[in-house]
Structures are given as C-alpha cells and as structure tokens.
Image: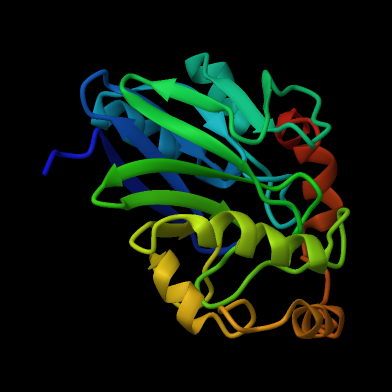
Length: 241
C-alpha cells in the first residue's frame, strides 16, 4: 500500500465551534487551508511557518454566517489565492471552482463537489487516499451525525438531501469526513458511518421526512450573522479594514 501524498492538520475555533484544516502535500511542501477563522489568524500563520509549508490556496466551503473568514488576511500575508464554489458571488475571490474541477498542490489533487443546501453555494473538497480512505471536507453540508441548517442564505432542504445522497454518499465508505463545525467534541467521521447512523440523512430516511425535520427546526440565527455575511461576501476584507 502506498503512502498518502498529503497530510491534514485540523484546527479548532472554540467560540464558533469551527474546524479549519491545513492540507499539505508531502513532497512539494505546498498547502491549502480550508475555512480559516479571522480570530485565529496569528495561530494559523505561525503554524504554517512552523510546518515549513507554502500556502497556495485558501478554500472556502461556503459564505459563513457564524464567523468572519481570514481568507483575505492570509492572502495578504502569503499571496495564496482565495477559492469559492462557482455558485457563490464573492468580491475578492480569485477563483470560482466548478463541480468536478480540480486544484493541484504538488501531486495532491483536490476535487470540488458542488453540495448546495445549507447555502446555495456550498462546496465540498475531496482528496483520494489509499484503499478508499480519502478525505472529504464537507463544510456545513454534512456534519458528524447531523447537517447544517437550510433556512437562510438560499438554503434548501431538498438540495441538501440530494447533495448528501447523490454526491457525498457515493464516495467510498472509508472516506474520512471532516466537517466545518462540531458541537459534541467529535473530530471526524466516515462516509460509511454517516450512511448508517446520521439520524437525519442515513440510508433509508426519505427526502420527505428530512424536509419536514429541517422545516421545523426553528433555530435562532447565528449571533454574528449581521457582521459575518457581509464581510464574507468580500472574502473577509471588511472584517479587519
């Protein structure tokens, strides 16, 4: 069995319960960071230097409503390109990646998967691994034993259901799921686990029942939504200027 071409370093922001991830190519020393948080810019910048990697891309899974992205600050510091899914309208992004398109960091290929539902522009990022044990960064589309809400930002419960069942659940069962948030102390899951145990989305749960659940959650809006969404529509630029 060959060794994976990449390494992953998870990073957590306690206030927003956000996971960010540094994905590093072993041979080239190039890296991407996924969903960085504004308040963690010093921690993340320091770690990139300590790891001795060159940041090539900042990947965003969607326009976040609960925190401001550090994308623009990281671009200013490193020259990395800011990437969003093609369905987003973000001022300051360098690239809008379409479903099925790939980005390369050294020999590591990252495939974009359009997975709308939590928001209209949600995108997951998949990297292959050995014996099916790749990794997928799912944003808020698929959480560990849960999923993101679908009641604002062009959200759609029907779209999220199909994004999970038609896209994410077609990945190998051993694929590691790295979500954008976790509220129960879980670091990762696997596609096979979520197909069996996700109470909302496991195989056998109907689209109709899922829509009923999501339409009746009656959740409060995130505390930072009024500041976060406008800032993130400018790739976080207004978050610090």
